[in-house]
Length: 304
Figure 1 (cartoon, rainbow, N blue to C red):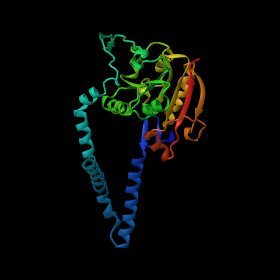
Figure 2: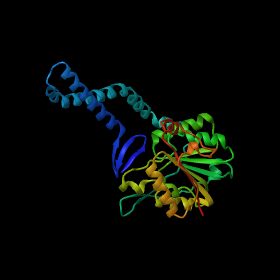
Figure 3: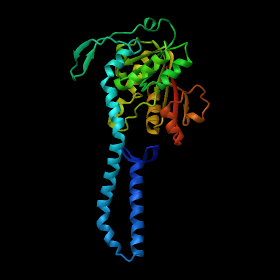
Figure 4: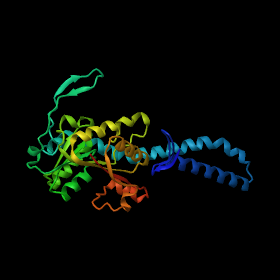
């Protein structure tokens, strides 16, 4: 059992989580019920009468809240749907920033998984120089990647994202800023070795990766042992991984996996924003959680 594992969850029992909003709704309903009981006594009504109305009133309240959400959030969803309709045009406009990886389908394995033939990128050709190559896995809308590329023109950055609707926003940022040292790869992390040469990466960033909280999902976490072994093959000797997350359980899991995989943990912080790390790039997502008092967990691990 863990109290307050993150800013959204009140308490967790293994894979079972009770969110803050559920606690607040139930607390509000209980307070309203007790207040009504007291008021009815003052007005000389039988308090038991209220019991007949509690369940339907609670149901109507939840339904009303849901309708409010649908009505006022509907416009935002409609706008997102409109953006999806011209997704193809937006992706085409970002040609050159989102790399054409030249997928070659190689059939299926015995488990029904699609096989892809290797098509190793020549990073010197991609960027036009021999600068060190950094890799961000799960770049989202590209705020971190764009800022890092601006601050560090002496490095080349490959940013990986699996969601088309998200990566196009990241690529548009890079194009608008004319960042020649930033390129994007539209693939899942498990396919990196099909396109990146062994020992070609200087540093890997894992920023607020999905924690996949259920135990059966552990193999999908980007710090699972299977991923860490792949990163070892991609990293140069002495290369490093930098991870930050707002999820305590995911961070604890990551520390165990890094140790188990033989990495050297050089820096560990339980509150990044209060630490001596100087070159941190604070994203909008990270700032939102930090402003709520949620600590950001951080580590640096080096390949031995």
